[in-house]
Length: 239
Length: 119
Image 1 (tube, each protein chain N blue to C red):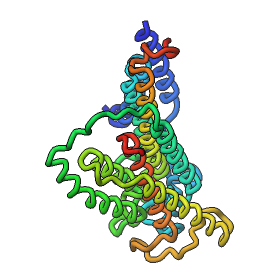
Image 2: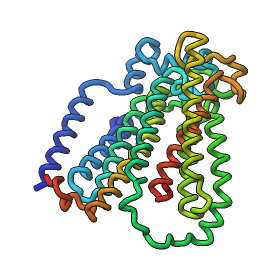
Image 3: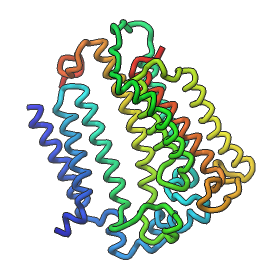
Image 4: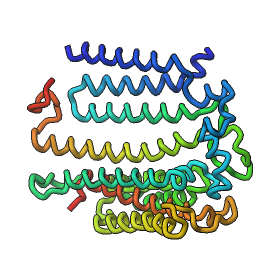
């Protein structure tokens, strides 16, 4: 009964999608075939692609959209991430009802040795990703996800080496503070929040694009510590 | 053939969304329901990316080899999805912690056996 009702509901949703999408051309490819992609006022992705390099100085257009044009949105998204991490901690870090689960099984020799060897390299790679976010594919969010994968490896292989919850939350608060203060300095100097007030520098150089690398590194540290905290709480390292 | 070539990613994304919807509606194990929610998330991300895709387009990143904006795909959906993936991971963590709490309270993950959640 439940399956039949669900299948009918899914058929209705699928019919709705097909009807609504088959009536009008969807997406950038359809717009290009109709010749509308050349107009800047129709397609503002096109506008960003044409202007971003001279306006923000960042070679990666996605980075300048995330940090510069839509920086306030990104602040909101980081806040969503923070609230999710807070929810996980609130749900799982209560003292009562936590019974000892017995001895944690020791990881095998390969995982144990591999995690001690690989964890610094993973952190180095993540730092490279979020420091070069304005030049190459990558950025704060991706680098944070890479760091979180390193934390998963730590909790699988060598639990004794885990980073403490206090250090994680200190890193998280400090990097969030850096993000907001950089935005407020832009507001004080030029009259708009998250204004790019630093010099643009040479294009394709590491120290270029003004505040974008600073904010991206702050986002990277914040996402790293939040995802690391989530992984640690789920792995029961919370106390 | 040309229809398939043009719309294969849309078919894939809506296929993922519908499969995820099926899993959410039919399965009774809470972990499977969470996996279904994640499938829907992936489908929506794929849909957003493919809206901005141009055939034979390149990534919207300038380099010494790519100095003009000609042929670059739309950067806005990519920026949206980039954050949406990370938020999806954290929401997955939140859902799993709710599942852990429910298991601690009811002793089961079967939604049909948990009181007040029947339909």
